[in-house]
Structures are given as structure tokens and as C-alpha cells.
Length: 138
Image (cartoon, rainbow, N blue to C red):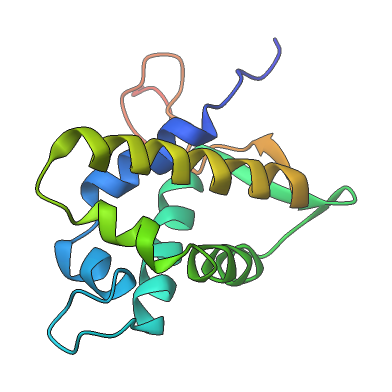
């Protein structure tokens, strides 16, 4: 049985919908302080990696990579997103906002795939019946 193909771009796009507005405001320099907050990129990277690790793992040259390394790589990639692109993420109109989320999700997914090997590695085995983290009930 081969491992299913994981849609990394869609998973990152979903995290955009789930992340708090203050984090996006901090990335776009639209928060209370009106400047970019580097802590926001750290929080967003941690959120993305935590969500991804439920289904996949990261390897480099065949060796498993610690989540902290992936988080730091993703934090740097998020911080490199131009302020103008991040400002669209907190705009009122949903059409350009969703387009920007898709584009940024695509770029982040491509960078992750270029740097790491993505492997199917679910955090919990739910068994054939999907009844819980330890497998089927007896």
C-alpha cells in the first residue's frame, strides 16, 4: 500500500484561515504598533508545522528532521514575504485576500518541498476502524 500524496499547499492555505487576525496584522505591519512583528512569523510557522506534523514528516538526506529546524526554515520564509503581499491578507475584500493566500501558500509549499523530503508519517495510528489513537477497540 503506497502512501497517499499529501496536499501541502492546501494544508498551508487552511492554516491561513485558522491563524488569528493579530498574527496576520503583525506580519502586515497593520497591528497596534504599525510595524512588522518578527514574533508573528515565529507563531505562524509553529502553527503550520504543528498542523502538518499530524500527517506528514520531514526528512533531509534520508534523515528525520526535528520540527524546530522546519519551523525556523518556515519562519525565515514567512518573514521574507513582502509587506505589501501581507497587507493584502488583512484587506477587506475577500477576492484579492484569498488570491494572496493561495499564492503565498504555493510559494511556501514549494520552498518546503525544495528543502525537505515530505514523507507520510501520521502522528497517530487510528487502526482500520478509526476508533482512536491506539487502534481498534477489543
